[in-house]
Image (cartoon, rainbow, N blue to C red; front, top):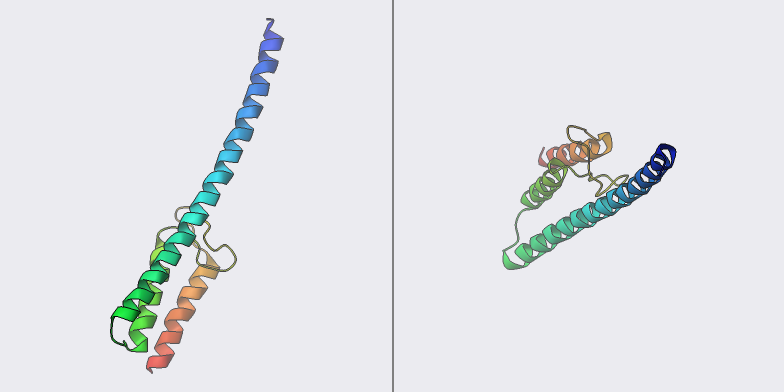
Length: 114
């Protein structure tokens, strides 16, 4: 096989690998999104179970638990905003939509207290 044919074959192999890697990346993003959705659903179900098991708690404690859950999800590197919900955030990258939700949640809770 001449060098040009070898180079052509190598280029075709690289293109095929690039497509495979892109497909795997998309699959991984879908799995991460599904995993996040399941974590959120699991957390919500746990909260519902604890509500059924415990006596009625003041609304303030419920709000704080919800805020803590949202903060944990966001701090784990996932979006909580409706624009990109469940998508993985790049490390060190903040999302203004997510932060707005967290800020409004905190400010809303403070208004109810005062």
